[in-house]
Image (cartoon, rainbow, N blue to C red; front, top):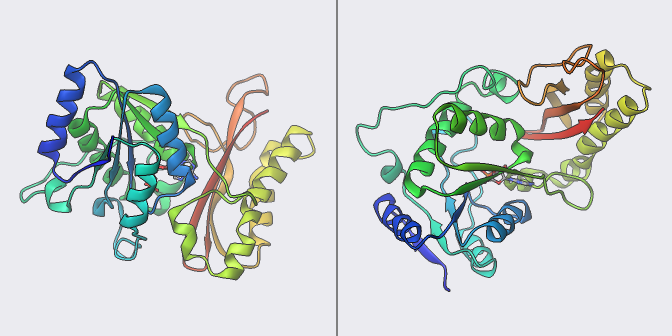
Length: 290
Ligand code: AMP
């Protein structure tokens, strides 16, 4: 089956209705394009679990603040469509901003609390842009399941909360982070890195792994994890800023500074970081079991 490219929400809505009427399960992957193997891992998972796979490419203006990289966000629609075709995706939904946000649009969807932490502190309008567009895309495509990468751990957590709180009839499937061979988490923004920064970038993952090992071997008390992680990240010569780097409760995303909230000193915790390498902001995380 060739890849069907749909540009308007009214048409994809009808297409989705037709698939549902045929009893087909729809797997949906929202993206901003500039696709890489990370995105394609979500596509593969969706193909395994559904009859039809829909991918959207929409660079959502509402999730970028003034001065962020909306205008320069990497675009390569030719390469994207070739990758999607090869991967056996059924439908590519590629709307214009005027289709998603027509004149008179004035609704915002906000998830409270967990959006204030981690990235939310540094990008205060970002998550309301994400939750607004994801609500719209889920309403338009009406998928059985929607796939999100844990590379954006907080985004996954926020979307899961949104879908639960608003009783939306879709299953959210979190998928593992895909990395380059040297450990750098794949991201469309990695192409912004100059050669020196790119060579340094795997040290972000290495720093988190170092802290993971030290915590697991009881060589580092939990209360010193953030200090150690900051120290390691700041020792990377191209890192110009550490926005956050610590250990967090994987559900509430509240920082864990001493005793684990699980009580018995065990359980999963999230190591999460956001750093700037020159002008490029990189995030990464590790969900670890203590
Ligand atoms: P984006 O195009 O950056 O908005 O990402 C679209 C989806 O792909 C989101 O759910 C991301 O979390 C996911 N994604 C991006 N990079 C990766 C990666 N390296 N591994 C797994 N999923 C990813």
